[in-house]
Amino acid sequence: MKQAIIVFLSSTLKTLAGALIVGGLAYILGESFIIWSFAGFLGQFVVFYLYNSYLQYKAAKTIKENQLKELEILSRITFTINCAACKEPNQVVINANDENQFVCGVCNAKNAAYITAEAALVTTPIATKL
Ligand SMILES: [Zn+2]
Image (cartoon, rainbow, N blue to C red; front, top):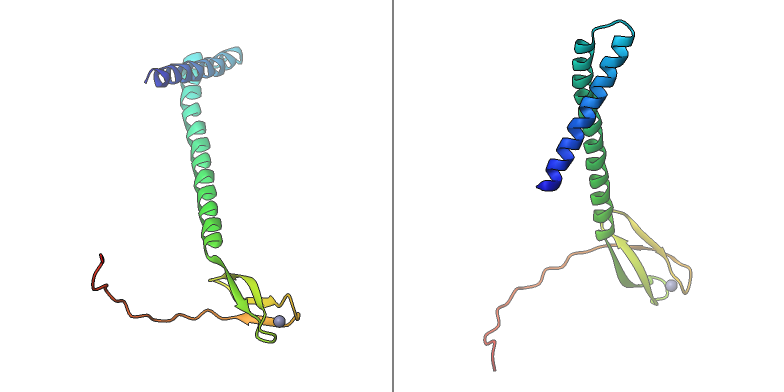
């Protein structure tokens, strides 16, 4: 809480200083100090609102990109698949969202890996303790 108050006061003083600099420059150029100080004060809110909106957009985009990368990594599973030609086992990374092909490490045959789903009957144990 104390840190927040310090940040708020520091930020307010910087905003006021910025407004007074704008007013001072306008006064040197023969314009109204009060009006240009006020315009400088409001102008900083507009500029920092736009800047913060941009930062929020950028952060949201980065989060979404990271989530997509995580989903892509999670959709990959390594299986041991026997080659269709020589029947030797190969370690193959399978991506659930993609066509999966691999070259056999033993005979260099080009294989395609197909994902199939099987059903199994769910049973309940008759006794849990012996
Ligand atoms: Zn093979």
